[in-house]
Each structure stands twice: as structure tokens, then as C-alpha cells.
Image (cartoon, rainbow, N blue to C red; front, side, top):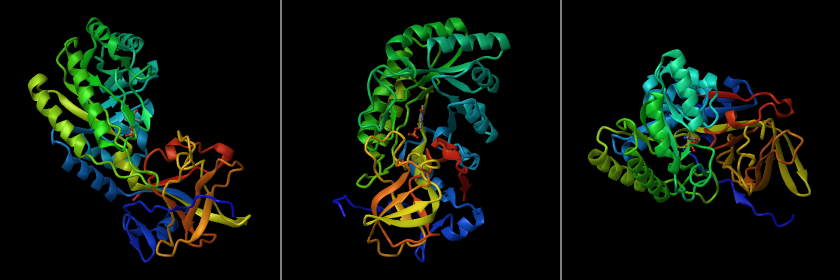
Length: 412
Ligand SMILES: *Cc1c(COP(=O)(O)O)cnc(C)c1O
């Protein structure tokens, strides 16, 4: 065999194991698979979501509002489960707005961000009475037109593209030229225009980036976001009611990555809470999180349909792969492909000594779920489990590629 770098399967997960078999919500994996009746599925564990929310509440100052960004996992049962536990929902399309409203959440606790909101979406958002994060001067004009035409007041926050970057972020969404929000330099002028347009101003939305595992970097960005909000508040057309300080809390996906330590973030937020009490009393401070709340509570499971050896290497061919789970295949924003943590869900207690590559059924070399990992000797019918799959899984995958079957999702 050529000198491939082998990786342990890195079983980085919070799921229970009984007699060598993974459990989801207290149900053995094989039994759950039989109940679902599909060779590939996502399963989300309600208790793990609850634990994560409770952990965050215990760490952050009590007055900090926690919002859930539906983009991470819009499955209705997941959204319905998490909505009563958080302080608000953030949506990024009319489709997500419908999901958010269907949970019974108060419209005052729902906000809508996104650089390409259509006239129809703006009208739906105004009619719903939610807060719209304005991303451009043009969008503000279109909103005012909608508001005048319908007679319904548009509640708005200004999304600001900050004049700093979130260091060490997996995805930077602020700083430099960006399609998101209005550059901090242009904000004062647009804030004055809000008043002329008769928009009901609520506050600021500053989102610096995503998937960061360095608490200090997130804390820095939050401090800078708060300073920016303070600076801009002098041009605000009315008192500031809310400042959304963003999120970016990451989860460990790859071998060697460590859990985010939220202590520095909690400390920064406490400083901001104290400062806000003096400088902008009555302002709600919000963090908006997606993957941190749900990512580690979900697994992707797919059945092995074939097993073969090619020039000394063992390949497990599974029912699903890239078309169900683009990010685990390494094709969603990764530069160098790395393995998500994987296990054989019904052989967890067996010795992992077989160098294995797990692929999906598509006729493309991109359809890889794990490359050169050490796993127990598996057979056709066994269940491959991909962890850290509760966010950006099913909804972020090209499920119709090669006319594959759509993946099933359950919330247990
Ligand atoms: C994508 C996104 C989120 C959620 O990001 P996570 O990395 O899942 O926490 C939150 N807010 C905005 C504005 C986003 O674009």
C-alpha cells in the first residue's frame, strides 16, 4: 500500500452507546433504522439540543438573548423543539419565515437577514411584523415603498458590514468588501434616510463570521461590534432597542480540533452588558447561533451496500453520501478535504484496525464520506454514522444530484 496517512476515526461525540451500538434519544441505532425504514437518514437528538442550550444559558450573562438561525437546520421538528428554548429565531428567506411563524414564536422575536430579499419577501416580512435586517440602501427604499403601499409599519434593524474582521473564522462575513449589510462608513447616511422613509428603527445587526473555535477571537469581535454600535448610535433615528452582536460559535469537526471555550465570550458579553447599562440602557443584546446549538446533536446514518478491495485498500460503498451530506464529503467550502468523525454505529466496541475509505454511490470521485480511517471490519448491511451532522446537512446538500432518493430526517 502506498504511504497514505491513516487517521483514527476520531469518535468525537456525545451520544450514548449500549452493547457496542450507538443510541439516539435512548433508541438503539438498528432499531431506529428499522423504524425509519430508510437506508440513509439524519437523526437529531432532542436531549442533546436541550443540553447545549442549557449549557449556553449557564455560561452567558442572563440578560443576553439567544437566537437560533434556522439556516443551520430548518427541519420543522427541530425548529419546533428549539423555538420555545431560545429568545428568538433568525430567518434568511420567506420559506424560513413561514417555518419560524409556524412555531408560534412572537413576530417581535423573529428577524430576517439576507442580501437578496425579493419584493414579495419584504412584503411578507412587513405583513408578519417581524424585524427586517436591512442590507442595502436600495432595500430600505423598497421596504419604505412596501410600507407606504400597505399601511403596515416596517420594523427594521441596520445590518452593518463592520470595519474589522473576525479572526480565525471558518467563514468571514464582515470586514472588507462584502455583499452582506451596509459598510460601517455608509451607515450614518442610511440611518438618517431611515427617518425620512418612516421606517421603525430597532437597532443594529453585526455579523462578522461563522465557524470559529477560538473564544478569544469571538470575544474580540463582539467587543468591536459593540463599539461600532455605540459609535453609530449617535446617528440613529430613534433609541436603540436591540444590538445583535452576531455569533460564529464553532463546533469541532476534524481530528485535532477542540471544543470552543465560551468563557472568554461570556466575559466579553458581561463587560458589554455592564457598558450597555450605562451607555444605551434598555438595549437588548442578542447573539445568533446556528451550528453551535444543533450541529453536535445530529448524525447522518447510511447503510453499507457493498464492500470491495482495490489495490489493498478497503472501500465501503454506502447508500448515500455527497448528495445527502455535501459538507461531510468535503465539497462545501473545504480547501483540503478532511474527515468528519465516523464510526460503524453497530460495531462501536470492536477493535478499529482496518484502514477504510467510505464512499457514496455516485459516479464521481467527489463522493467520499471518509478517507483512510481506522475502523472495525465492517460488512454489507452495517450502518456508517457521520457525527457533527446536525447543521448544514440535509438542507445544504444537492439531494437531486444523479436523481438520488431524498434523505429522511427524524428528530428523536
Ligand atoms: C449563517 C448565519 C448564521 C448561523 O451561522 P452558524 O455558523 O451556523 O452559527 C447566523 N447569522 C447569520 C447572519 C448567518 O448568515
